[in-house]
Length: 278
Length: 287
Image (cartoon, rainbow over all chains, first blue to last red; front, top):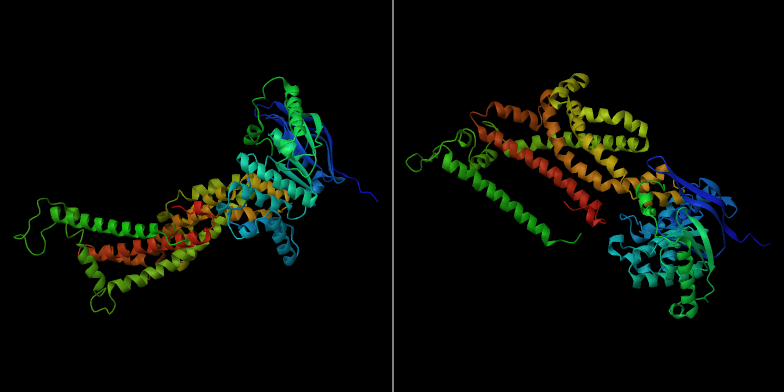
């Protein structure tokens, strides 16, 4: 018996928003993409290319205007109700009134289930992100990187089929970011989870991914998919590997090739501010 | 919560402030009040302002003395004990009204946040309710439920629920949209979102409103006691001392002092509960 290795299947996905003046704005068009079990796929592109929107479409946080999103053979909506998604955003969005362990426990509380099992799972997750000693701390007592690790532990707590990460390290300093990259690879290798990772950073995308999906703006579409054949496990040496630099150049050129002009004024963040992405 | 030097300093500030008021009070009487009782040949004030005369503004020690004296001739209890009893009675009414008002306010806010139709339909009436002067409404309430403690509690409730409603609408909507999406990705029900996210997130807003309404409920109870015909509380006592103001202003001043002490105490209790409940959110407990 060989289960279908495809976890995410996007077919002809389009997303159109209506601007305040009533004009339609195509955020995504003609997206076809398949992601296999255990893959680490990055979405990269200029501001406004709809990469965050695409992630939200995959996670059923916003419906596509047309096309289909299938997760493990199920419609995305069904997958969300089955709790197949773990989400990590750019800000950790920890609940400030909950301690670290209570934050990690939150999805398990929502899902229900046995207490003993739950507690064991919380401990396991905190050990996974190496924060066992901080279980009873409160979010304000942690650094940004630690907060984001709590967010990752929380996202993984109910063993989702797929981890969706939306620029999770965008707000961190470069040093912390590199450390978090290694951290996330370790967790990925340990859990074997499928990851879809949105980023602005070319080195980050290359370092982490098995495939980099390059997108262009106006309308947002996939222009190239680049296989990253760097050996694993990846570490400090990877960043000094010649192949690493070649791939970075390849992604950069793919990004530049898309456009030929500067990214557009309508960015993801502006769309979000105006409430179009919800 | 670590014992901070800030708390000690704030107590010193408060005491210094009270001393300053006392000095200003007596200074005003000294330069513009009536002659001191020791006689005009000792000190004749250069100005005469009737507001600070002994008929209006008693000396602080007279107020303190009145508090220590029997509250009326041949009475066993001192005025302080008498007023403390009244204050406790009024506080009970105020606290019940405060509780009902808080529950009503929270309930309305939850309904409004979950139903745009309800919000559109009822918020204008909630606002309008607060434009009706309580003195006009109190007799109606008394007429409806009878002259009783119940009427007083309704008045206190009425003065309490509005700030809670408005703050809680804001508070229940305060969660980060990402936090709501997170709950969505957990396939959480609306009820779960309310319990695990919206209500905890709204607590700082709730306490802001409760600090306002702690004092408002005391005022409401005092106002309600007049038309409510409840003679056991501060309201009736204040009315009584008003009538004897000419002969003994220090009694009314003593009652005012006890009343504000009651309000401050109630506020402080709410504040302490706030510090305890919100101790994991240091940035939310300032002020």
